[in-house]
Image (cartoon, rainbow, N blue to C red; front, side, top):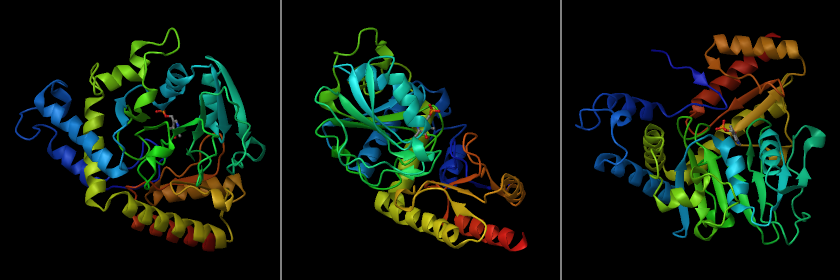
Length: 359
Ligand SMILES: *Cc1c(COP(=O)(O)O)cnc(C)c1O
């Protein structure tokens, strides 16, 4: 069996230890004689799995008691609609446009009300985070929306915007659990777990309790009302059982490895190795303004499409896979999520140096 260094943006690398454990439990989960995929979500065994997952997540993120954790499905993209359906009481909200995912959320919100562009970095291909210290937020806006880590462009809000008292809604899909965060700064944050935490198909929402109401936009499906899932501890219907089980294992792996403080250190170390190289390389360069660089997604280019293609091909043959940039931006992108070992980044940089010397 040969495992590659997988730099995919998502679905992405998971801790090998977690995969091995899941494999061991595949046919017989702890003496049940069946796999987690085959058991009732109403069983006592499964109840322990989902409750432990939530408890461990609460420990990792120090989630205050007045925030609910929801395990949902439908893709992070479905939440682009659920957010306005549940929170756009005045039918007006402000959006900060820092890339494709923010733009998609913005377009979706326009179906339900007035979505206002508060700031944008579209003028420079989303290569930076716009100044958010004095946004044109108005009194009648229900919330301010951001995509906190821009998976495609490799930017990250290192400081949250001043929302002028309005609640902040944040898509944290590609930076979830990569470092400690202050949950109380948000009204709601959410993540599709396939970027940094688990298998595609599960989304995690963390939402302040007072935002959970029956007062949603007319026509909101029962399944898209956050309160439905909050009232039923994410067991209103069959949840993405297996995905939650794997997430639970990743939470335990994170706790065992020092929690989010330790993850931040490791992620800073890994990103540092790669950015330091990009800053001194004769061939490669990063595409993001330095102060806005993401710890998770690192886009870079050589300046020549031909050389980019050659690099991606040779890297792949050497066991460094999924380095091709997003189809809309080209170049390369190394996603270096929690489960990417330091050694993987060191070896990638050594390979890049070698490639540069030979060209
Ligand atoms: C991948 C991604 C999405 C979309 O996730 P789906 O689960 O495919 O809908 C949304 N936001 C961000 C930041 C992402 O990285």
